[in-house]
Image 1: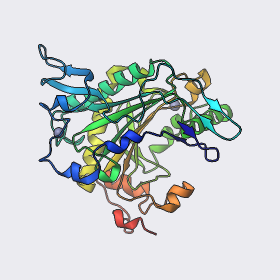
Image 2 (image 1 turned 135 degrees about the horizontal axis):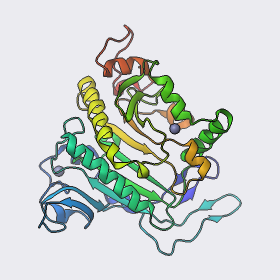
Image 3 (image 1 turned 135 degrees about the vertical axis):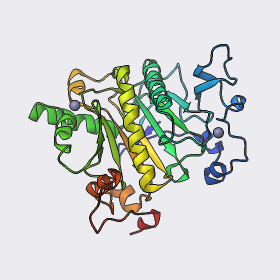
Image 4 (image 1 turned 180 degrees about the vertical axis):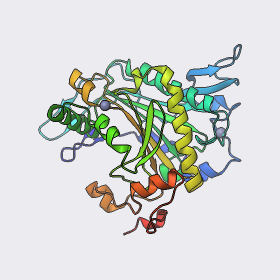
Length: 343
Ligand SMILES: [Zn+2]
Ligand SMILES: [Zn+2]
């Protein structure tokens, strides 16, 4: 693992990733063997966790959610991981970590909009328990739970699945957000996300809410229809969310993905859990508030976005929220598609 001496971003050098199935041909060719479909369990690495019917055997049929190590991992556990190495310019970290695949359903064509609510709740429960297990491993400092759907979002398998990568470092972006949240807390005496939630109700960006969660379109989006799902009660880490609240979270997932599918049809997206680092300080715990980001990939980031981290978005989040609520939008609003990205 290397940290850029100039940009502070981390890179994981993982040559074996080049052997994984590539791109749209695999995703659309349902005639090929899907390693994540029931009956093809031998095509994956052995399972590390599964919810199964009684009297069924590991790595066989009879599961509802199945977790395996990634066959082409970005990182592997390394018991001999050395601490960071620094020189005047270059910073390295020993490659160490975990890369798991959470296979979310036996239904190859399931989407979050169409899964039964109970299965969605079960999936979120598995996300939480895998986060808890993987973050308890030695020398893990942060964990990324994410989901890629569709080739435009980087998926190489069409079957519904999420991924979990645990890292021995804290990525720069999370470090920056945590520091910003702590500064906000120090100056205003409250968490920035809690304060944002209070104001979103009247902002026109509220998409849906229930007693425990709110869904809002992002104030400063990177992609059209970028939507965040946020717990209403302050909580820094999804791992410590009261499991009784998973039902409310699943309800909001179903509602938001249903609205997105109604507006966009089948759409490529990334889903990202923004969570506090593993051993966050007390002040970080007060200031950081976890959320789930849904990033529809209707446009492709261009040189401007990649080089400057400034995003051009053709649809306002207020109009996007109105579309997702099923209401009217301003006359200028139109749904951008991929070919709008080339400025
Ligand atoms: Zn499948
Ligand atoms: Zn908060």
